[in-house]
Each structure stands twice: as structure tokens, then as C-alpha cells.
Image (cartoon, rainbow, N blue to C red; front, side, top):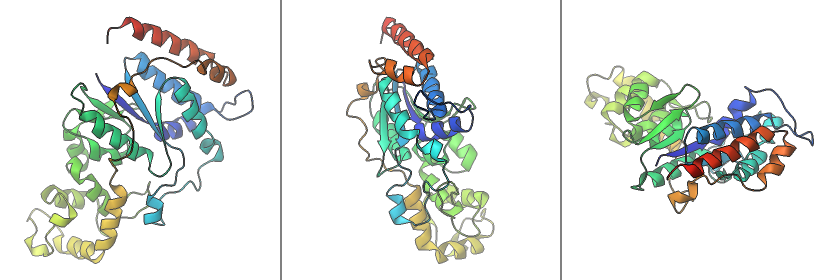
Length: 296
């Protein structure tokens, strides 16, 4: 079996800015929710059997306690934020396992689920469904991969190296020095993507980098400048790496069978009626009937 782990936060943002506004029978904005439900359902219709969705129930997390500049919900449209609990509720009604994060982030849940799924010998491949560069640290060989559904591309370990110039294990170190504007930390002055790739391809982690720039590999240009900048900001670099490192200890599931989609719950009919989305009910019912005819 394959496992599909979906970044619900990314999907909700993506659909919010891509689909027309729509309100349910109570006047609540639900356009993005309907879009995500349809998108997840299309995966199931396409053959996905074991599915989990992680969401940021609240945008803030434990990382905000570590670094005041870390991303918050400030600036996020309230019409978007209000759809998170609705998405979680309706996905569960559709029969999909959901991990709503509060202390951790959705990315941490995806990383934890991917690591746990990869340990199950019954699992063929684990697809982490998001283009988010943070999740590239979870990629392993060709069996734990990132799936960018928008562009229909798969990024395996070789793909991570091609895109970033470093192995998946070095992604937190890479982000620590180049920064991550989406998460709100700036990186180390003078370090760009090319320099970071050159250094971290030779020295996988920050601690492996020689303190004396004259000992650096001769292929690394501007070694002295990069070295002086890094070691002058050493504590910040370590903090940024902590921010970029995804947790693998989030409670997600006990058994991989927990993720098997077993059709919509009885409450989904009421949810679809309220959202003026009866086609979703018909599609989910039909998809379950079809999956019941397919041998597991």
C-alpha cells in the first residue's frame, strides 16, 4: 500500500486564493473548504487508500516561544482562518484522518507520520503531498517522497539534491543559513543558496564546518567571508536550525490501518447539505462503493 500525507494548511491557503468565494446556508465562507474536500476526494477516487491530513488549528506554535519573529496569524484574512475548524470537521465527516495542530505545526505532524509510516514493512511508498521545502528533510531514497500535486511532480532524494544541492538530512542546516521568509527567520548574512549548497555538500551539518576557513574544501569560494559571517552569528544559526528542524515525536497514529479510508460518516450528508455541496456526498459514496469492490 501507499500512504498519502496531505498538508491541509497549504491546501486551504492554495484554494482560498484560487477558487471563487462561496457561503454555506448560514452565511459562513466555505469556498476553500469545498475546494480542499474535492481535492482530497479526487485523490481517493484516483486510488489513494491510506490518507492523513495535517492542519494548523492555530498558526502559532512552540516555535514562537523560541523566536519572537517566527510566523504568526497576523495578516492572514479572517475569512481564511475561520475555515480551518470547518475543514477539520468536514474532513473527519468524510472519513479522513485529521491531525489539527496547536502546540506543534502541521509540518511536524506530516514529518512524524512519514517517519512512522516508513517503518511499516507493508507500506510501499509514502507521499508527502506538499511542495514546502521544509518537508524535503523527510525525503528518503525513492520510498518517502514529496508530491507536488499542483504541478504533478515527485521529488525523491535525488530530486532534493538537484533542487537544493544538499542531501535531505542537511535541509535544516541549509534553511538555517539561507533563511526562510515564509517562517520568519532571516538566516545568516552573506549566505545564499549557492554558497550554502557548496558548503553543506562538503560538511552536512553546521558542526562539521571547520572553524578555520583555510581548512575548507578548495571548491568553496568566499570561504573566509562565509566563515566569518557564520561564526559571528553562530548562536542564531543554531536557533534557526532548531526552528527549521521538524519534530518526529508528534502523536499521529498507532497503526497504519488507522489511515485506511472507509467511506464517509453519516454526518457528512448534513455537512454537504449545509455547504450546498451535495455532489461531494455523491462522489464520496460512489468512491466508497468502488473501493469496497476492489480487493485490498
